[in-house]
Each structure stands twice: as structure tokens, then as C-alpha cells.
Image: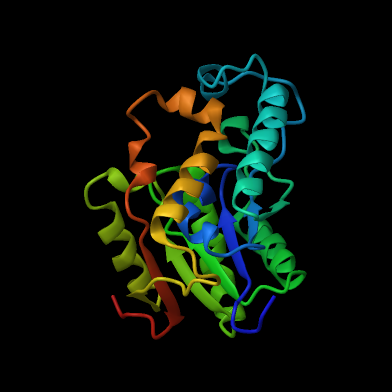
Length: 234
């Protein structure tokens, strides 16, 4: 890898979030690391409404199949999968923000990444939890380059992106619209094609969303560079 091609590390709450939200960016950055936070099955077997809509009869079956889907998607984009031992909120065993932050920080330290992408944490409780954990470690890892990405599908709700940007400012984190520089020269049509191939690998999730309800994943990706400024006084 050349020194002019920084190594990306994308924090993905669930198996599909990095590809849904950042797939075109990933296509331009071979060897990026995609770290899925909620990648573990529940200790006790169960079936949730979402897993049932996805076509699964059990949570363990769902996690196994979703891992396979994720491997296929990331292979299309030449990305490296990293998986953390935490569970979806739907499995009723969410980690504390502090525990999540400590584990994420340790995982980041073990990579060669110098550019990190975190979700804005829109709407979904799991996404919010990951956002909070990232905000906790950002000041400690401020020597790295940080970006936030819009959570595809969840960003459709009016006002949520603006509210989150205001929240970041309140925390003393400056968010400036910016697109992470491409590691490789690859034209937009090709990036778009690769993203579509990767998105289609998540068959179970597209089934659960339903036809037409996931079109937002193909809309333009938006990013903000983050830096630690001064906390606003209330």
C-alpha cells in the first residue's frame, strides 16, 4: 500500500451499514477495514420479528447467514472484515457505552488505520450507541483523521441529520462537509456498480426492508470531517 493511500477503518453498527452507507467510498479504497460492532449471536436461541422478516427461523441462523452475506459483500469491495463480540439490540443484551468504547479503541489500535469513519448514529438505537462510543474515543485518538458518514435509510427522516450535526457542535466536535480522498483512481460509474453488487449480497436484509424501501442506499454518500474544538456553553 502506498503512503499516499491512507488505510480506512469504517465502524459499522450492523453487517450491512458500512456498505449501505459507504460502499462507493469502499470501492475506491481496497484493503479498508470494516469493523462490525454487533456481530455476535445471542447466548440463548431466539427468534425476533426482524430476523423472521429476513427469512430466518432463529437468531443463530440469522447471524451465520448474515456473516456469509457480509463476507461476499466485502469481497466485492476488497475490504477486510473485523467483527466485535457484541449483540444487536434486538437480542436484548446491549453493551454499555464505556465497554463498547474501550473495545473499539483497542481494535483501532491493533490496525494500521489512520483514517476512521463513524456513523452519525441516526434513529436506530444500535447506531446511536455506536455513535456515543465513537464520540467518547475521538478526543483520545484525535491524532487520527476522523469522518462521520450518514446512516443510509435512517437519514431519510426529516431533520435527523441537522439535529445530529447540532449535537456534535454541542459536544465540541466540529463537523465540516468533506469527502475522504480516494485511495485509487476508479471512476464513479465503476464505484457505483461495485456498490450495487455489494449491496445485493445482503439478500436477507433487502428482503426484510422490502422492494423500494431500501432505494436510499443508492443515493449520494455524504461525509463530514470531524475535529475536536471547544464545547459550546448551554
